[in-house]
Length: 243
Image 1 (cartoon, one colour):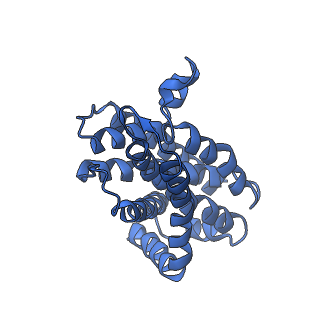
Image 2 (image 1 turned 120 degrees about the horizontal axis):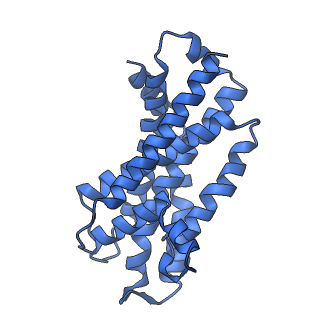
């Protein structure tokens, strides 16, 4: 019941700010597509660069949408509205609150990805997006929603949320196999960036969209990230409850 309550809150917030959320999900990815995809007439791996770019932009949208849906709101609720304190003294199990926040953030990320897919639908690229693609995108959204939840527990002020975005989300957006392949990076740094969740997601989505059979290793990596960040979220929220 607690999970449904949190999801209902997210749904009410989504309906209230529908146009703001939709515009925010559209503008940056659309600019990337126009500038890099249409403005730069090039090829990548023997295909039009746009075919390489679209899967990366879709994967990036799940990251930014999921992270943004949780990080800032949770920071405000915890630091100023004291909503987290009210949850802790309520009969709602804390694990249900955590799961609800993660699922709500992941769904917001999926909405952002679907917006990009709709915008690129008129462009006949021949890319394939199937059920496995959406499963991977949803899992990626869960990872970054959980990461945002953990960071919101660590935030000391409202201004910390934008800083986390600048320190984590922006570098990943440009480095993690979105606009160019990690294969071009120096050894060592290449392996580090390649192991990040967005790199794994972009690689898998790009492979599926090209009709290449994917290894389950990428999904295992995302699941490991999900488990680690979920354990941290549970640790932080129960530690706060016991203070």
